[in-house]
Image 1 (spheres, rainbow, N blue to C red):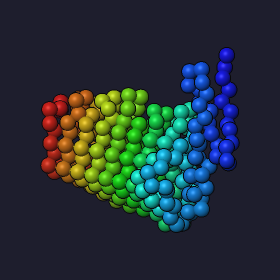
Image 2: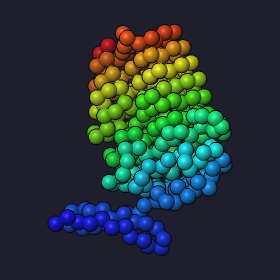
Image 3: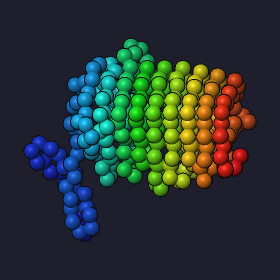
Image 4: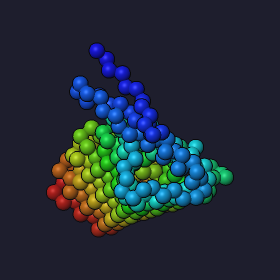
Length: 264
């Protein structure tokens, strides 16, 4: 017998019904509340409750909610996908600040994004004039594909995967941008790269610790890129540096790289 999953309203708070064996457990859904706070914060600041976990049943589309930029002060709050999440992306900005006149920027601090084994890409899309600081991604990736981090600074980034997540841990197309203090540990299950630099121009990646990935570090079609202080100690790293022969990579500099007992 198929169990229906209705949405209940208790004190104006939606609850998603989740089947647990023969029982149905109502789980809080904070999607509407989070979207409302962000929409009101367009061009200003949204303050999340310290340490609170906000449960999401759908992706947060920041370019629609905050087209003039925003600052999220997470205060160690968590945005977490509920079971049966409806999308493969948790937090996205597919158009935000990519084109004029959107140049206000975006700031996200002290926030954890938890894909909860339902989301492949926790952070996705185009980000310009963006600052991410003290951001943790669990059970998903920061995945850009052909999108761009432009004039961005990402610092103190931790990416922690799980047995169901096999995309690149951090797939980054950086332009005039810096990544400082990044750790990627995908729980030994990556089929591709822990850190993949794709199409980067004028970028610095400083203080990198990679624990695993079929290609622990990968680079394709990059110019004027500096990688400084990188440690690779993944037990599943078979190739450490892979520069594709067909790419036009040039002026790539590595400083103080420690490869530990990996295969090169």
